[in-house]
Image (cartoon, rainbow, N blue to C red; front, side, top):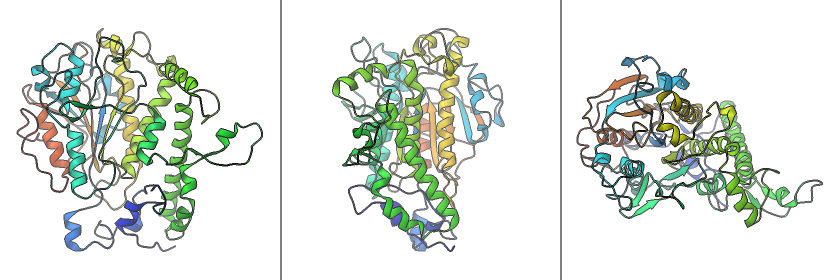
Length: 468
């Protein structure tokens, strides 16, 4: 079957655009011409804006990359095909897509007043300036990038900000809430922790998962039976589009829709607790579930749901900037035995020895790899990077280098080629006084939002880091 040519507007409009929601599409071969640009773009337009944009994804590992030394994390050799350290063993067949960066100094953390190490380190990481517990220097990098994309005409969500852990150790404790993102000097952006709320943030407040009249189904709670999928609202559009596509694009569209349905079911199950998937619950039931959801048995499904939603939002161009925190710094949750992580809690283990904390770091790196897998499996034919991961800069790091709060040698994982602009599969070591802000400045350069120019990031980011 010969595929119909589709314009960039089709991708941006998505399915169901005539209604109250639009469901994004993956990039299809039918949208890209022989030059690797959108069909219908003039030569000038094609040179000015290649397809697709470079996304920024920040995965916050939390509580440190090691306990007392960085030896379990830092590879023993530099350059291409670096040997995997114990902390990075989960990257074994993904090593060629990830750069390890060692030696950077988080200067703003050292100059932030107060004794709350995790809070001041987390709050200053994406501003590049010292912070207090209540104020930052201004808008963090995620908001700056989101502002620039909006100014360039992008109509999606400027930023997404979520966390996998349902608990908040800052509430009712001696520790303050700890956020990566600041919308303004005195305005922290709280991450979304509920998968259902996150789904609706991405697809719209009325995007599926809603109640509507439905026939009674024997043995099934009528409130569950009446739940409609987001796909129900775009079914006609999807069938119409499928008739215009070639065989390969039809398969991509089918896979795309099945993944959306799969994550819908996971979101309903995780968000509404044990029992019937998608069961609606009273306020009292939901309050009880929130307490339950902080336990070991629900932690892993919640992580996977939040990771899947984040990867999907980037693939659909629902947002080009996303932050996903693995957990809260100071988080003292425990994982179920099948996770392979036992003993003390996350934060408690980070202040123990390297061997005791190593399983936690490995689990977090495994979660980071899961995010990378999803982004790499999302193909973007005819583009420099070839996949969502390739067309991104995906940063994985922690608030502190060590659980003992040392940040002189901050461990960094950087995946994606930024659309072919950098090489991956490298371990680079920088002098210990090299500011981490130089890396942030380099990321802004790689993302290259139209109209956005930055000569300095934070207090000491004055020279973009020289990446391989």
